[in-house]
Length: 227
Image 1 (tube, rainbow, N blue to C red):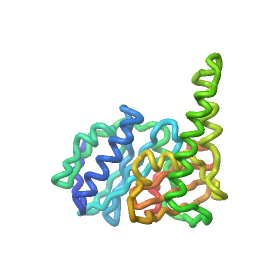
Image 2: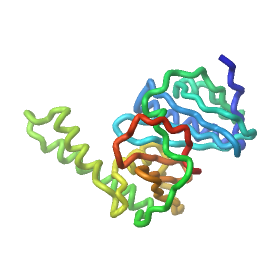
Image 3: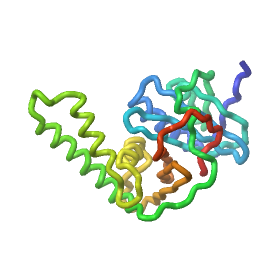
Image 4: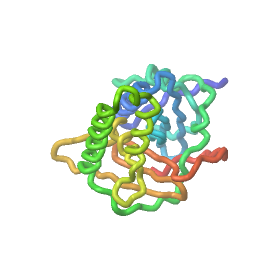
């Protein structure tokens, strides 16, 4: 197998941002894999799928040089290969990709979806949902305090849509948990929702989460999301 040359980021801080993203993914799945795509334009897209959120997480970064790259690798090994001070990353060997790695969002065709509340309101909605889950969990009688019952409550809460957008609350929870929706004092974080066919994508300056509103098929899509 031909070795992949190290990736050099246009801004060294992008290496730190990618490392932070990978650490969060590994917090949810120590065996996480990520799919890397790069091509014309010098942009790198890193796709991951944290368990339980049922979304694809996308972190992008600018590279010094445009490279042709499309490979699925271990998130842990990629993290080990990142040199934050040097602003570069060594790409590890390919691994057998999980099913989601062949079902990526489309490259283009994205249209804005109106009605998305401000970032602060989205964080408040997530906090209220977490509080509700804990309250309902604590109120369960001992004989009903099972994993199945807790999962049922969680699905009910996190499947609720945000305002009239059709975006499940779990997607907002995922964005916040992965560091894409930070609470920055004095900053009005720009957040936009897009749709393309059955796909929805919540984008912030720190990353995106995407999900399908229809069941996934087995058709492999080689495209990367619009950036």
